Image (cartoon, rainbow, N blue to C red; front, side, top):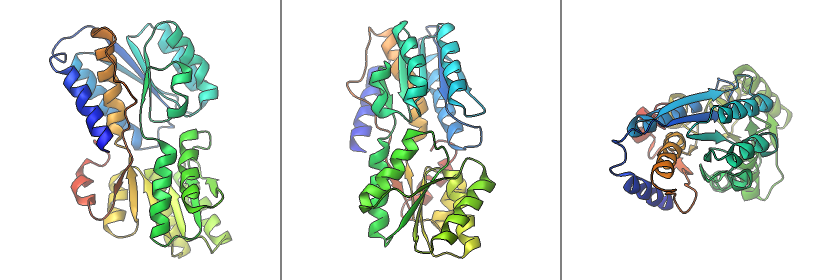
Length: 307
């Protein structure tokens, strides 16, 4: 977290005096989503706030189906419109890499965010803003094990998303156990049904990691319905997740500060375009950080808005 604060401060310092000048910039932000995840509106808000700060305009796009081919087409369309820069999440480098690389090779500056840290450079991006996902999962697993978990289950709502797989993998690596992950989809009803079925099939499971906030809320309902005694850990913030933590129904959630994932790429691209390629010397890690009963009250009002 100290590195994040230093990197953020450095970028803010470089940007001093630049925000007041409008240069007619237009940035396209493209993310992976099916429109059901409360995580992404906070990312979009961050991007729009940054654009307002530097006098730029933003186009925010996603493929409603969550299909990677559809997302690749959005990247191609964005590149064809000759924007000042592209900000894109990278959940599947094999599917999205060619479109991103083509945009970068055409001279459009690209920054990846949220997912795809390990593949960012190879697809031609200038840098990445997001948390190292396996490390975040490892931190979650280390803490879960210290809090008594002996056998875990990871709920992944986007099986195609390498970042979410990394979270699950890190969780089990910390425990020295084999990956035990199920695809629950983004549909709340399916999350509840599939989670309940997995818990009923294996009563030895005493720890569940939900790698999305809506997944966490649905998983809690399934755990309650089944009557299982399970340690629930989550990723990301939502009002519902905050309520669960304050009620002692969830142990903690991992905060990756997604507003930064929308905000910082726009600031960096503005600096890059207007100050002779000015660019931070490293990726910007937006997390991970723990939110638990000790600090949930301090960030509760920001959940779903700025966190």
